[in-house]
Image 1: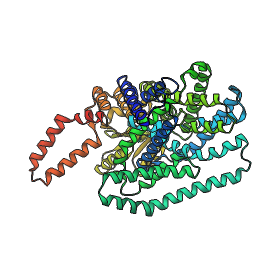
Image 2: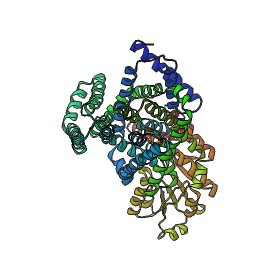
Image 3: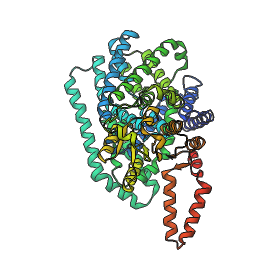
Image 4: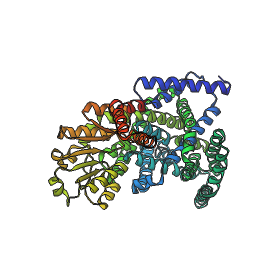
Length: 570
């Protein structure tokens, strides 16, 4: 049924609302609701919307906006924190997955060699959109596994440029690889150089002129034009539209207009991202799934096994704990949206069949549906997995005797920005402390600043048992990862039920779980910042010191949990 585009857009938004609400009621990620409702209303089911051009346009805009805001929110310092695993680990992951995918396709599924290679290329890519959405919703974007996942995903998106070069050779349409590779590299370098030049001189001038008009509409329109213009520019260059959107966001981040740009574009991004996930679901053909369910089951299982084991092996090889490796593997096993483009290119090159294309589409949608479920399942089963996984990857034996003899010290679990500030304050006060973290780069920083430190998973009982918790003064849990936070608290209380624990918390659900465990000292950076604002306002309002302290104390007593309750609704 061919509908007016306005009516089709209204149906898409309504369906997304219904699917999201149902998923929320069932305590499932809203992405599941978007994907499922897309399958239902799509051209292969109820056929409420069959305009493929409109679906493709909405999906493209949604991906472009998602990647643009990702560029605005991800700083280069975060890539430095990830270290070698982001580049070399990501490269190993791509090459290993391509190799194993080709082997499975050729020997197990009996595809031709070109189709098998194409299968390897497709499954080496994960979905930046899905992972970014899940990590954001779960509050794990700044966690160790979250940073590693984002770094690997961005490298995968950049590698699409090289993959698009390989496909013509699979079909026999291209014969000169060096010339084609040189042209692609030249185009990429030229676009990056143009983006850097624009970021240094053109964008600050343009944004300043638009900002001077003091019109929110013009500012939003400028940001939107920059995002979509960069996506269109890379498409003209024969590069990935996602790469262009991310790059211009990364460049704009270096300007003073980043915060306003992010504030203005975020609501629009959320709408189109929702439509993007619905449009993905619309590509799935339920009848094809029913007819080939045995083959699809084998292919999906193979994809999950290959990608999970590869990511797990890479991270373990780079010295990360079993918990981080399991979480990253569970989050990256889906096929990315660029798999659709590669598969379509294979069909157009006449070396991949239409059945192969439908298999890729179905496998991608199924793995995307399973990803949030797997993350939720690991959250529930993590305590058992933590006992199976090797919690201690490395231990500095030179400081182990001192650690066991340390009395009345403070244990700092997590050496991020908050953990570093706490350690600096304790060092200044002459209070002994021990740092525990599973990020090798952060442990190196802690060792450089002096003090005791241990490379290990603080949520693992074997790690905490080496820290003499029974005689510790307090445990500070400063993880940004809710899963690690709750598990660490449970493990520490099993060792010492009377231990004083101070916990960083952000969300209402997390705070409520910690409260039920008996944690009384909950600290939210955002909540504490609001008190700093109030203190400054009261100080220049002529209010007496005793009156200021009385009001702030009453607010802390009466509303200590209200922030978390309200933040959960946002």
